[in-house]
Image 1 (tube, helix red, strand yellow):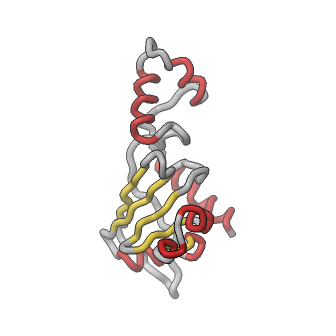
Image 2 (cartoon, rainbow, N blue to C red; image 1 turned 90 degrees about the vertical axis):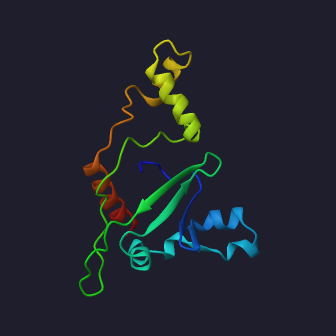
Length: 155
C-alpha cells in the first residue's frame, strides 16, 4: 500500500482476524481477543494455502478512518520442498492515499483541494503532501521491490 503501519490494522481471513499484538491487547476484551491471531504468527503462505486460488480477504487500516481493501489471491504459488516464494502484486490501481488524510471522505476532499487551484485549502494541501501528487500513479515494480525489501528487513 505504501502506508507505514502508523495506525491499527487487521486482516479478516475467513472467520478469523489477524492483527498486531498491541492492537489485540488494546482494543479487545479477553472474551473478544480469542478471535484474533498475532500477525507475527501468520504467514502469507498459510493464508494462500487456506483460501486457495480466487480466495479473498479484507485488510482494514486506521480503524477510525474506515479504510477497507479487498485482496484477491490470483493463484497459489508452486511450492518446492514445502517452500513458498514471496507473493507478488500482479495488478493495482491508483496511488496510495497519504497517511492521515482522513479516510475515504478526507481523501476525496484532499483530491478536490489539489485539483482546484482556487480551493481554500489548495496551498495547504500542496505543501502538506510535499508538492506533486498523482492520484492515478501506480508503480507495480516499486511495490514488488518494496515488498522484497520489507521481507529482508524483518529477518
